Amino acid sequence: MRSILTLSALATLILAAPMPAQHVPSDGPCTAPAGPSPERLQAFARQYHPETLSPANNQASLLVGLVLDADCRLLHHATGRRAADSINVEATLGTLFPGVRTTPFVVAGITDAGPEADQSPGRPWIVWAVVKS
Image (cartoon, rainbow, N blue to C red; front, side, top):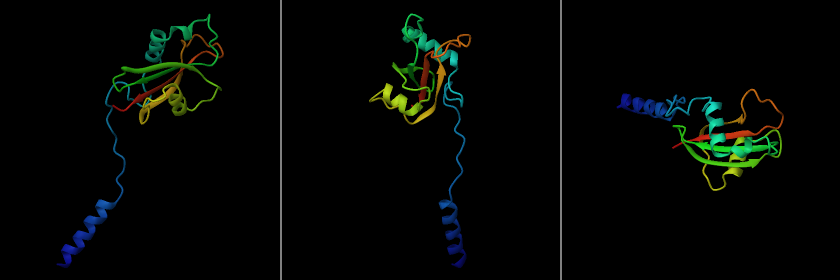
């Protein structure tokens, strides 16, 4: 009887102990730690919001917001302006997409909207998130 109580207490301790986080395998091409490639994000910006990349427009502080799924399918897109050169991704996505669930996300970030060759100051940014399905 005593060994059953000891075994029961040991089992309770093992079950109550915190478990280390397990690595969750990638669910799609956009769930890698770095997220989708800048080229893919820039292609979405050119396709859905070419006006933000036009030199004729005042590009300073423009934002393109993108919400994708794990397979890099575009779920939502929007444009806006940033108030500063430093932004919070989560708050900015919430502002660009009111009423759209952008959290929890798998990975999110900010990238330049233009090609690497264009280093002009104030060029547009892409704020993006890959959301859990």
